[in-house]
Length: 419
Image 1 (cartoon, rainbow, N blue to C red):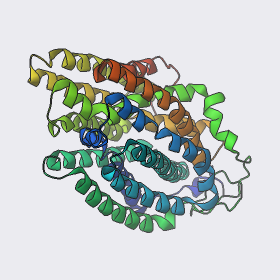
Image 2 (spheres, one colour; image 1 turned 30 degrees about the vertical axis):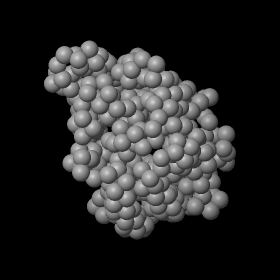
Image 3 (cartoon, rainbow, N blue to C red; image 1 turned 45 degrees about the vertical axis):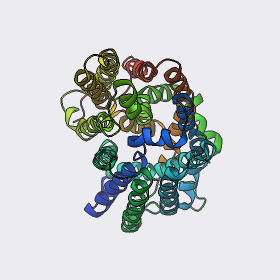
Image 4 (tube, helix red, strand yellow; image 1 turned 90 degrees about the vertical axis):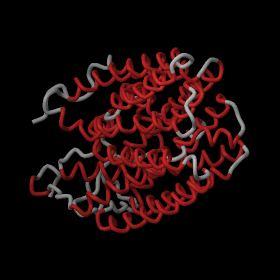
C-alpha cells in the first residue's frame, strides 16, 4: 500500500487529534511563561537591556546542537522517547531559572532550554507533519493555534498573579502541573506516535506509526544545513516572518514597562493582545484561504502587520510623556497587529518547506530550525544593542522592517484558491 493509494489514507481519531493539540497547548503554556515576566527576570539578574538581550539570544547555541542531531535521532528511535525526556528537562529548566541570580548560570540554563525546547519542537512537528501527510489534512496552522492558546492562557495567568505571587512560586507550581499533564498526553498518544526506523532509511512512518520501508537517501548532519546553502529563499522568508514574534517574546513587557511607563502587571497586557492576534490568525487562516489564495494573505499579513507594528510603536513612544492612555493603547495596537499579521507564517512556511524536501519531516524541521537559529542569533543581538544604545522601541523597528520585506517574496504560498 502506498501513500498515493486512496485506501491508505489515515483517519486521525479524536483521541489522537485532541492529545496532539493538548501537547502543543501545554508547550505554549510553559515556554513563554517567563516572557510575560521579563522585568522580574531582568531584576533578578541585575543587568542592563543589552546584556539581558544577549543572554536571551545565546540560547540559540543549544538550539543549533538540537537541530544538528535531533532530526536524525527522532527518525532512528522514534518520537515517544524524545518527547518524554525533553519535556522533563524543559519543565525542570523553566522551574530553575527564577532561582538563578547570576548571569553565567542563567546563560547555562538558557542554552539547555534552547536545546530541549527545539528537540521537543522537532519531535512534535515530525509527528504532526507525518500524520498530515498520511491523512491529507492540513493541520499545522491550527496546531500552532493551540500553541498560541497556551501562551495566551499563560499570559492571562501572569496578569492575574504577578502582583501577588513571586516569580519562583509561579514557575515552580506551574511547571510541575504542566509536566504531569504533558506526561499524561504523551502516554495517551503512544499508540499513534511514530516509531523509530532502527537504522532503516524510511522517508516517513506508515499508517500505524511503523517505519515505512520506502528507500530514502542516507541522512547526514550536513543535510540539516541545506536551507542555508541550497534553499536560501525559505530561510530568508522564515527569518523575516519570525523576528517580530521572537522579538516580542523577548521585549514586549520590558517595552511597555520602560518605554510607556506601565506597571509590571499592566505591561503584560500588550503581550496578551499579541498572543490573541496570533491565535485569531492561526485558527482562522484555513477559513480565509477559501476566498483568496495563501500568497495573497502572506503578502497582506507581512505588509500590514509590519507597517502597523512600526507605526503604532513609534506613536506609543512619542506620546508616552504626554498621554499615558493614548500611548498604552498604541502599544497594544502595535503588538496586536504585529501578532495577527505574522500569526500563520510559521505554519505555512513549514508546510512549504516540507513539500519541497525529500527528507523526513523531523529533518525538514531541523533544516528550518538551524537556519533560523543562526540568523536570528545575529539579528537578536543587533536588536539588543540597538535597544541598549537608543531605546527598545527603535530596536524593535528592525523586526518590523523584516516583516514588511516578506511582502516582496512573490512566490511564497499557493497562488490559487485551494478547493
